Length: 74
Figure 1 (cartoon, rainbow, N blue to C red):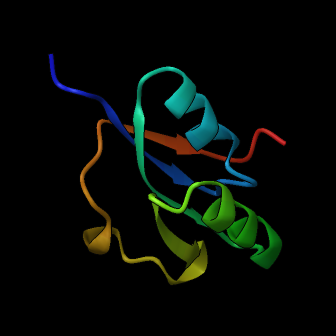
Figure 2 (cartoon, rainbow, N blue to C red):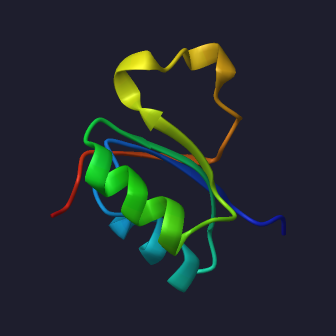
């Protein structure tokens, strides 16, 4: 079985990627709109691609993933 991957839009402070790691899913990328949460996830999950401000995202630039999460659970 191959490993599942995840991308997170409006990531907040990285709760979805952290939950993914704890459940055997690899977070590949995340995006957010607020500067502070972006800095938090860059520090907590440096191996994940951080696209920063979601307002500047282009869908074709995102890497393919198995699961996409939306919205901050905070």
